[in-house]
Image (cartoon, rainbow over all chains, first blue to last red; front, side):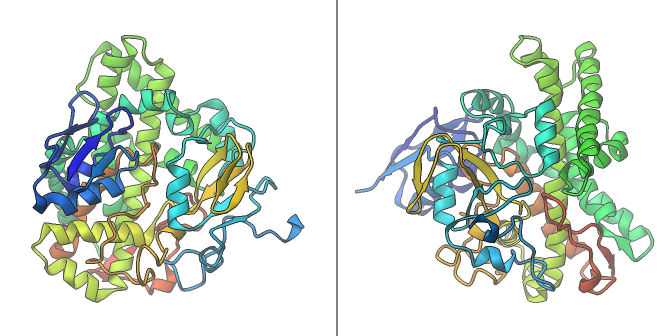
Length: 65
Length: 399
């Protein structure tokens, strides 16, 4: 799984950080998403899929093999 | 033909205080309704279509645009005096929202958790030391979010009688237009004074930071800072307070769910219960509103530019394709993808704070008062059918 985030689309709702804190963080100035791991380990894939599903700005894209 | 259109909002069924109106749940995914001003916007009820519309910025949140289906005459009149960023489109909406997002970052909200726990424990101590029956709304459900938002914003809690009264008038459908406009103006005037005080003596709180970072640099005007503060204050009160009180009623009416929540040590189950109660109750029950800026096909129906759209999030959260047996309250179900906070770029800014407050409350209140029960039959409770945010007006409890 490869994760891509679009910081221009992000609205800082923070849902991805709650669901997968090892993969997503927020920058201090405005809460916009920061990607911590582009290729998260398999055990985090379900959480990352859910983060992508609930992102209100559709700012998370997943490429799955 | 339009004479036969159903009115919106619709009425809930008697004795089903937690369920959306049956007529709403039975409506087609997209259909016409008639609202207070005689206009006939589209009503959208199914989950997928609501997410598609709320995620599509060709549907505008700008309340000044012709065809925008205002909630009430009062909201339309208030928006003429002041239009907050929730009633704007990008890029201006994004510019203003991003000035506030850092206040609701997950790590900042988590840092507030011990203080929220302290507030919750103190209020429960006070309630237990007082007379019973007690009103859970005035004694607990309202003070918790009120104290929290006051500390976050930098508003003196001592003034709570004033701003809670303004807030109550603003969110009621039955407030006369002039009174609602006055309540909005009074609240902003009060906050303008507070902004002026913080210009003289800077403070490290949300309003203080807007003053030093945005007002001082000319990015925002004084009116805009006061307007943002007003929006945060009202939103911070009316939502969490109603979730606490109405959530308690729902749990008391589902004792097996209440027992599971009370007896668990698993913070994940508590967090899951918060999501399920947000879904099940969907207290923002008057529909989110947009207007199409071009001709767009929605669920097989052409919506013309200038036509209004109402998104019934409460119906979307009862969509059985997404939530099997949607009328059942089940704190362990997968409900995380609910749309109780809306969807799209306008999705609730304060949701991390709301979640944390509700997690602290639901994991503490029923444990500290395991014998908590209604002091009147549930049929006697007055539900907020007339408010934009659903809940109970008061909640007599004993233990």
